[in-house]
Structure formats: structure tokens, C-alpha cells
Image 1: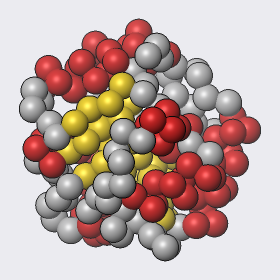
Image 2: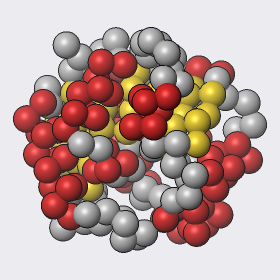
Image 3: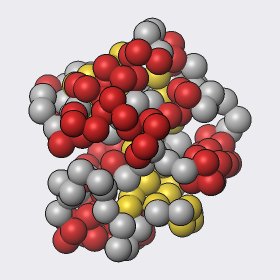
Image 4: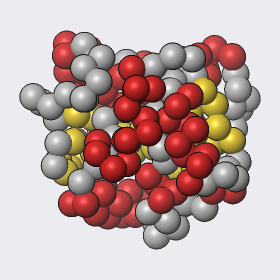
Length: 182
């Protein structure tokens, strides 16, 4: 599957990933919601897998979904063994039922990837997590370097997350939301 992120994947971690303050703030928020060590984890829009790099989750308990094969290749170069990686969008994963009925201990959509999800897709994510999902949207006025995100769609997605959120915090360029499960 082709993605606008393919062109920047090889330099993503060095030049485009979250800042140290964003990683620290997001990690603290995630640990506050899910605990110190994440168990079976689904990461939608996983990119190069910073939850693995920061030690939030062990690779053998990690399932990632991302449209960019190049980003997944960068993840595999750092973490050659994971529970599963799927080169597709969240909607394709749902349609093709690649996760079957699996429930995860923690569900993530980080680094702005939640901005690409509709309100119904955000609800689908929460249904996959035993304790809901932690999602990360671009804050108002922020946008990805790939310039492939429709601003109105992103605004509507963030509005939906704000309505569903049990807790929400702004960290750098991003808004993190905990979307509790049903």
C-alpha cells in the first residue's frame, strides 16, 4: 500500500518524530491510563513504532497497523520480531477482519495518526481495547509534514475525540485523549 509517509520513512525517527518532551508527556499519559508496562497492544498508524523504542510494550505483545510499508520496514529494522504488522489502513483492517475478534489490553493511535480517523473509526478502536484507547490528534493549527491531511476532517476527528474523551491533555503539537471502552 502506498502512503505519503513512504518518502520520509527512512529519516522519520531522526528528523520528524515526536520531540523528547512530546514523548515524555505522551508516555506519562499512556502509563497513567494503562499502567507501567503495556501488555497485548494494538497500535493503529504505528509508523516506526515509538512505543516499542521507548519500552512501553514488548515487541512480542505488539500488533501494528500502518498504510506505509516503508514506515513498517523502518519499524522492523529496529524491532525484527513483533506479534504482527499489517500494511493497511484501519478501515481496510476492519473490512478484511485481520484482527478477527481480538481484544487488546491497550489500543493506541499516536503521533497524530488519530487525526486520520473518523468518529466511527475512533469508536471502533475503543471497542478493541479492554480499557478503551489512547489516541493522539494534531492540535488545532498543526499538520503533518506530509501535508496529506484534510484540515476539516482532522478538526471533526478531534471534535469527536473530545466528545468521547474520559481524559484529555495537550502535549506539544498534539492532543492526547483517553477514549474509554463501552
